Image 1: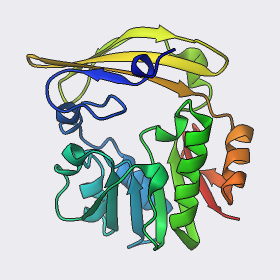
Image 2: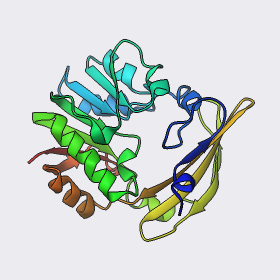
Image 3: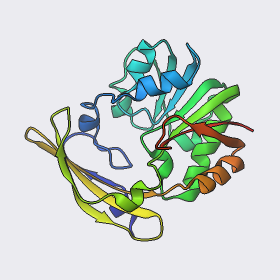
Image 4: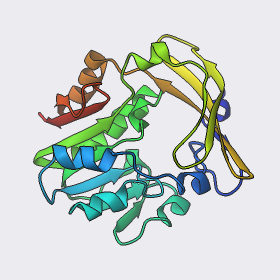
Length: 228
């Protein structure tokens, strides 16, 4: 399976190396994530947001009283983030030489099918979380991989999303192509993701010097981890 087929995007405007359309992501709004995170961490906690994209939740976290450093490898994504420190860097090679109360890795980035890359992501989290701090990860609930089927719907923001390709190429793997339509603009995003069962994720967290300490919601999609 070629890398281009696995992580690929099309459509107007800049496309990031992992296939995300910058112009589309810049239209997206928070869906309760900032409030969920805020309720799980101390007031005024400093946050390192890894894979911040176009700042979909960044500005809301700042409005809730947090100091946020937003990291992304796409300069075009970071250009949409205003009023906070931004760092252009791949997550896996980030080394700021300082720590934060919270290292945040959401948007299902941790579900990369590349196990070695995931290890590097988790090591970056561990390098940057303060003693007494926490790492917050967002994954799909493991059961989602068994239940997702092709769908088409209109989102609250007014765009139409449709699954045009759905394959299960191996145990715990899911290859998806999503098509997004907003007015006369259309984008696609193809990516491969891997189911992260609790015990598997815990083992990889342990390798990075972290341990799972709970969940932010009942569906177990939001994982909290702390330094060991």
